[in-house]
Length: 136
Image (tube, rainbow, N blue to C red; front, top):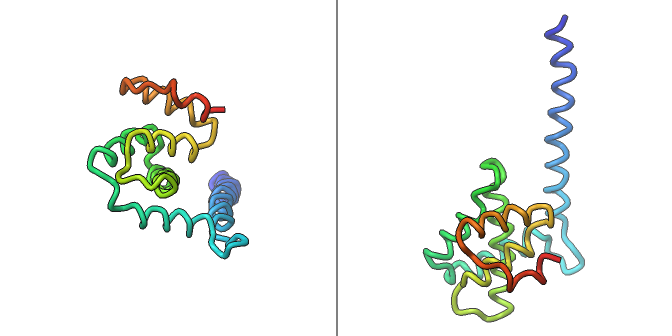
């Protein structure tokens, strides 16, 4: 009896949680007025700037996303890399610099996650004073 009751409660809760994340992904895949979805633009920026990423830039991005739980890390990294690629293309950068990575990270993440960036940059001795206007 308890076994059945446990599964009667657990299965709908798990399906609800999974459905929530699937619905969010579905909304990101819907095309906007320009015909491209958020995911299409993200992939476009990543593909256009893949040759601008140096070894040090990749290592910095990996280090900055290390506080993200392993399950969500790849998705977060792709979203942040897409924003970094967008900034690099807008500025016609020759390579992805630390400045572009930090600005892209700040702009791509929600405000609630900025405390993790601040903590990680503090550990890495990166000065964020020139980026304070982006945190607002």
